Length: 225
Image 1 (cartoon, helix red, strand yellow):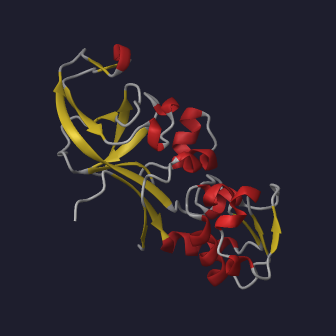
Image 2 (cartoon, rainbow, N blue to C red):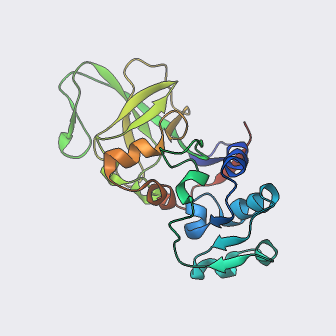
Image 3 (tube, rainbow, N blue to C red):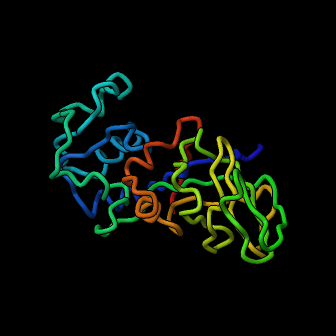
C-alpha cells in the first residue's frame, strides 16, 4: 500500500491521558473537535470520563454526530470559559497535557542550494550557507497557515528545521541542511517535537484555530504510543 503524502496522526493514548488528568465534566467538540474528529473524541470522553455530563457542539455539526454519544448529556452550543477546551487536545501551554494531533507530510524533492540563493516566491528566504531544501507535500490548501512562512519550524530526522520561504497551495520548503532526508521521508510540521503552541506564538493564530484549519482531505490515522 502506498503511504499517503500527508497525514494527521491522532494519538489516542495522549487523548485518554489528557481526559483522565483533567477530568472535565463538559467537553468542547466544536469544529470537528478542532480537527481531531468529533465522534472519535466524544466516544473517548464517554469511555474515559464517568463524570461527563455535557458537551459543547456546533449546531451545524449536530447531524454528523452519532446520537448515542449524546445520550444523557447536556448539549450546548456556546463557548464556556470554564471549559478547558485547548488543554484536552494538549494545546494549552500552561496545562500539564500533551499534544494529541501531529501533522506529517512527505518530502517530494531534496534540492541543494548555495549560500545567498533565494527560496520560494520573491526569494523571501535567503540561504546563509550552502544547504539543502526539502520540498514537502503540504500547503495552505490543506490548511497550513500561510503566516507560518519564514516563522515556524518543523521536525526533520529528529531535528528542528525552519520553514523556508512562502507556503504555497500544496507545497512548502524546509531548510534541512545536511540532515539525512530523502524523498518519501516524512516531515512533522507540528506534534510532540515542535508544538502547535509554538506555531501559535509565531503566527498570532490560536492553537485551536490552527488545528481546526487542517482539511478533512488530509486523512486521520489513530495511533497509540
